[in-house]
Image (cartoon, rainbow, N blue to C red; front, side, top):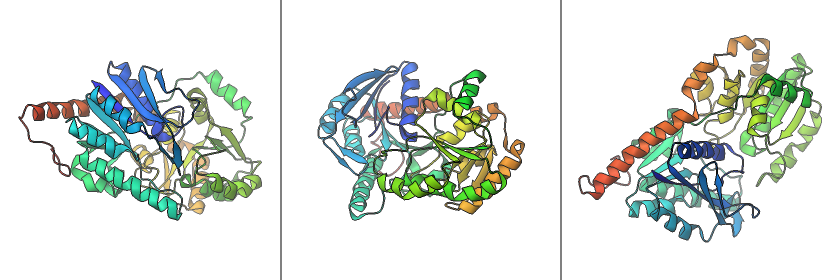
Length: 399
């Protein structure tokens, strides 16, 4: 199979979406498929073309930035050329360019599979409202032109305004989750490096407004009352996050207030993350809106024996609800988060499950296998349509 994958940002950019696509693309390439990723050259220092773990990565130059998005004048031409050399498309939304790509796939009578990662909700402003509207309209058009749409969980699919428009096309495929095996010596070295002693609350995310960092900050007094030496280890980009400068300034006084109980680790490698999780007593995902649809870090932490506390967002609550390895708290409720943190710190054994149970539900191998089956099904439908044995797929109804 020759698969063209398109998304706005790819590695080395760090987000749940880029990690998801990298894992999927790498595993499909490992299985012998030809995989090409078309993405943005968001950093001019990145090469226009490179091979990353068997995946051909092609980056379109960026002419301008629009909020968190980018404008790429040559993207359409590059997409047209690449579409002719591939059998199917895997498009990852939200993405402004998705509708144009889906149209090309439709004209070529190729399978077009969308993966809907989350909703787009930019910070409030008149300009961002326009950007939200334009991207959402492009996503809806891509949805109409697609042959199938992948969601992480049925929970998120049932509550998403976008996915509810295309219920007949939705296929649920669990996301790819993997954690490198690291020896205990590396875990211990990480502990010494960061002088980890008392209870540790972990959070792994970009410093972005939708992540709910202030919910955790405001929960700390309740935790510190019982565990004065508790400490938050925050893994992820926390400086110069695109579009989040005002948010960082707003939280700066709280970070200063809790400077003795809050440590920024910066962006960690995959191996360092594998040492980070077992050094945490709890991982928290206090996200505030549907720009978060799952929270891969929850399952990564669970694979390392660390329970999670998640906000009660559709999709985000599913790792805890499916495994029983943690607690779910109301969205934006710092008091409830503080109480949940204390409850788990008081009774950690109540929230631990065998690693095998977690791995059976979530793995990159399972995700890739289900994508392979979906594409095989879609390619067979496309072959029969070209042979005149089946009618074309309607835009808004199932095959």
